[in-house]
Length: 134
Ligand code: ZN
Image 1 (cartoon, rainbow, N blue to C red):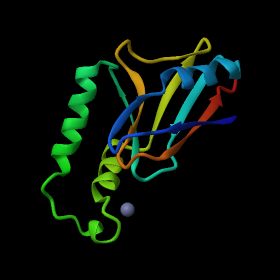
Image 2 (cartoon, rainbow, N blue to C red):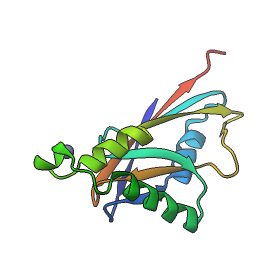
Image 3 (cartoon, rainbow, N blue to C red):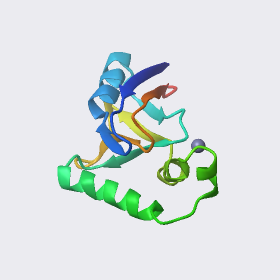
């Protein structure tokens, strides 16, 4: 089964916790054992697992800015968002998580985040749930 989450971002770089929306989809599916694949059909955003703590969230943004600042990217001649594409590729556009006893397995400090690198934009997150055979 497949579901979608829609998020409106409001900053150029931004971390948005989508853990509760993802877990609601898993609960509603009533699938007890399996796997969830969270996929972003976008090339200027990413998905990370990290702690939802305000200092850490601003540290991520600081790191992303530092990684791409002061570099003369060629793609910027076309639409001025080379940093967004490169960070999206580095961070990755999908994550697999196990489902056990109807719940997503994740660490205490692993919340699921959409990372916007070229906002504000409307983002779609595709959630695919795979059920174990038995
Ligand atoms: Zn571009």
